[in-house]
Image (cartoon, rainbow, N blue to C red):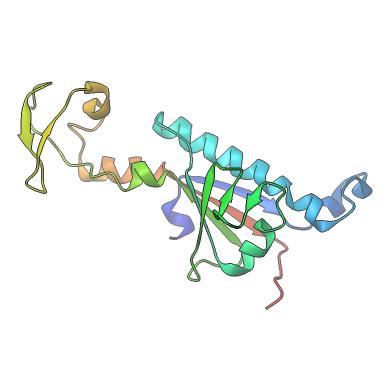
Length: 170
C-alpha cells in the first residue's frame, strides 16, 4: 500500500502536544497518542463519505507504529481491535510514518460489470456461480463503470495518516 493509492490523506504529529499553548494538558506521550484515534475516526468518516456504504474497518501499520496503538485506552490486544471498531493488521512493508485505513469489505468486493441484468433474475458471475440481484442499490452505482472508475472508487476506500516526528525505538 502506498500513499498515492489513497484518496484521503491526513497528518498527525507525534510530538504535537509540545506545540500547544498548554502542553501540560497532555502529561504523558501516551495521553497525546489518544489524539491519533481522532484522526482515524476522521479518516473513517471520509471513507464513508466517499462510499456511502461504511467507513474504515481495518487499520494497517507496522510493528513500530503498533507500539503507539498499544498505548490506546481502547485497544484490545486479544482481539487486535481498536474500540471494537477497527481491526489492526501488522504489515512490515508499511513505513514507520504511515497508518493506512480501508473499508476492507468493500475493497475486496468483486466489482465486475453485469451487462443488462434484471432485478431478481439470476445470472452467472465471473466465478461461475449463480447470483441474483435483489437490491438494485448494491449495483446501481457500478453496473456501467469503466475499469478506471472502479479504481477511482476503490481509492476512495483507502486513507493514509502520515505521522510526523516519530522516531520509533528499534
